[in-house]
Every structure is written in structure tokens, then in C-alpha cells.
Image (cartoon, rainbow, N blue to C red; front, side, top):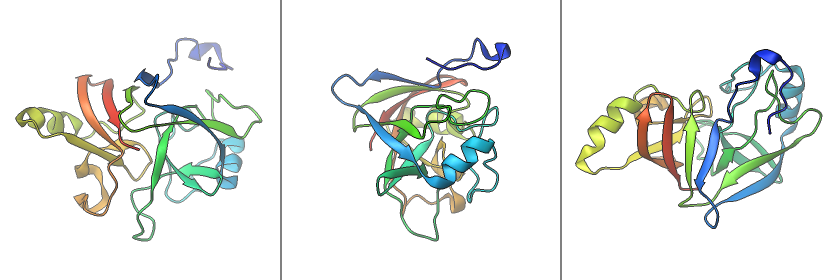
Length: 187
């Protein structure tokens, strides 16, 4: 349940919904990295490098996360050329008007190969997805990666547009409309 602080947000929906996750996925309990905790408490994520996508001042569910020891952080498309091993998709709003956490530092991270999720906008980067989805009628799966802002995106949104050194986070199963996608998680 969302902890809504402002009446104007009473119709806000959760941006990630597990569709096939009963045996395939696990909501992993994790703690935020120190830099994310500081950013969430001040609702100022602009000081992070790279700057993650925010909505109403906070991180959105569906953001790709990486594990650093026993902590999680927002994934980036590049980190000094090193490959990041993606951990899963953020389950909570963190910081801003829609904060699920309050003073807590624990979050849920959905993970599990072959689990299927519906992700609502703005929880994914839609730029180029329509073209990729339209071109996929040949049977080629549309691979989704962690973009520079931590959201799922297609290969054209990656820096340099090359996926050879990047980990596939999910495959696009369906794009029913511009406001939602159905993905098959691979991490």
C-alpha cells in the first residue's frame, strides 16, 4: 500500500505489478546504499552520478538495481566501462511525494528469471520501444537493458547504442499501449 502524503496523489498506482511471480520470483529484502538513503531523505537525487530517473521527487518502482555487498544501488548503463551485474527491479517508491519508506532504509527488489511483470509509465524509458516492438513481429525478442537513468530501455537508448558488453535485464513480451509494457525478467 502506498503511503500517500498529499491528497493530489490519491489515484497514483503502483508502477510494477507481478503477473507470473508465484513460483518464479522473489521479493528480495535489501537495504539502500548510503548515498541513496541520503538522497531519498532530502529528495535530491541530482547529486548522484549518474543521475537516476525521478518522478515527483523520488525513485520509481521498476528501476533496475545492482547489489553492492548487502546494499543495493541504482544501475547505470556504464560505470567506468565495467559491467554491472544487475540484481532486480525496485519494488518501492523511494523519496519524494510518493515515498513508501519513510525513515526506513529497507526496500523490496523483485528478482527471478522467467517471472513476468507489468510496468506502468514512467517506470520505463519509452523512447524507441514502439519502433523496437513494431519491428519485433519477425519473432526477434526485444531485449531491455538498464539505461543511464536506471530505467529499462531498448538498445538504441544505451550510450553508444551497443549492447555487446551489457547484461540483458528483461525481454519485452508485449506493449499494449504507450503507458504500459509486459516484461519477462532475466535476472
